Image (cartoon, rainbow, N blue to C red; front, side, top):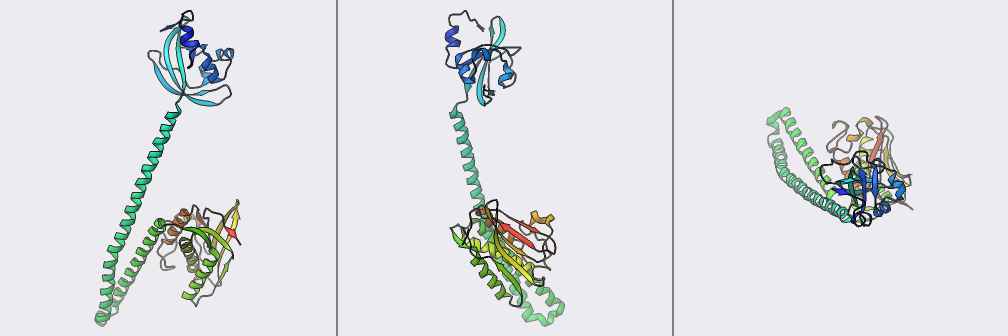
Length: 360
């Protein structure tokens, strides 16, 4: 195609065209012509634009000259801003020189809107799939727990029946075996309950309202002392700490953290457990600390993993699910939870709940 400035249709085709157009040399990239629409788009005066070449606008090298091509390109304006244009390249002869006639168009907003709509549809579909997966997991968990409880009850019941009816004939060794079977079934039942609590913590309906964490912590401390009256533990619970949260989940969270502190100070003389709040970067951070057994921070990332324990079962009892439940509760409130500790120097668990606390 030959494009000649002397042609009668040149002005109508090029100069007066409302679409931004320019002509560049096919080999050097030097601009040979530009229309008013392109000058308005890029922000240059004509003499400024004609001193430029393709490298000044960005977008890379032109396509091969043997065919038309339409490509997206990130173009640089006079003020340095970059916009995404659609460039239509047409090989031409201009002023007896091999050249490209280029039509520059902004990408249609509708196209961007279509991309956004497509992304929204994908997110909606993925959320729906995730919801189905959660429901299947919940159904599976309840089914497994129901199917496991019956055989566990039978194992425990018949083991105890053997102990009661034939204990003398079995001897001490046989009685020891049956006692261990009963202990194992009890442990398995505890694990099933813990898994169900984990599922409920992630699926229960939340009813946010003002919750007095200090009062809940004080009640939990009294309950712990009631269950083990022989222990002497000093509680330091800050007063007037309230937060907007689900009351049931907030209590469960404190039960787990205070219960862990109670458990891991069981071998510590003059045990101390503290609950309070501090401000970090303008956000309330709640904490439960103790002077108990502590743990190695090298394993801190595994703290909130289901069934992972940092102490042997014969040292401290537990299901290994409590902190996973605590993390799920905190996450559902838009917060995070972490810990600091050292072996033999106690532990402090920090958590946020994604909302501002109110200190009365």
